[in-house]
Image (cartoon, rainbow, N blue to C red; front, side, top):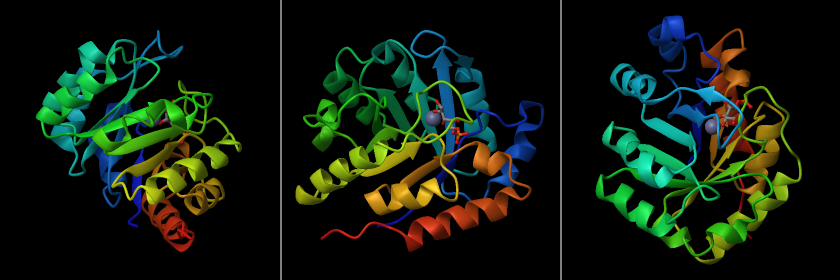
Length: 223
Ligand code: DX5
Ligand code: ZN
């Protein structure tokens, strides 16, 4: 199982976006959070920022859409050149249709679950998508603490995915740092979003390397 570190730029310094992106150039992906102040109580980043990250970054762009009506808005993030587009299952009206539409553009499709949404909510969609994002904080803000009971949800999903031999990646987002990444990796996550841990570190490059080696060292072994 390979390990992906996807630093979230939600709280980076947007006045110096290209320098901030250089700081994380050793990561595998870059995570961009889109918030509409309806699905979550915060307004952040939108198409112009996503387009400039796609233009400026050397990394694949991972868009996390915390918005109402992804059915209408998600396809334009795929068309803008994001490598992966993740919408929330709680917000999508027709997730099968939306997945099909996103796939047509060649993007990877992710489906996100709020902390209280059970894994069964994506069970029927699981063979059509590339990634499940398990939120490990309530979506909306960076810098919150990891919700520990989510470890069990990661475990359930990993065991389902392994049993059915599905090529689905499990991403975790929220409160990931040097200790929680170990819990998430052991439970079966392989893709880790980290915002404050990376951007508040003195040396972002080093922090990314440390997080990745911890995840590799503690990666889940199927029994
Ligand atoms: C929160 C966002 C996250 C956020 C993570 O709703 O989806 O991507 O930036 O930030 P940290 O790692 O600080 O919890
Ligand atoms: Zn996110």
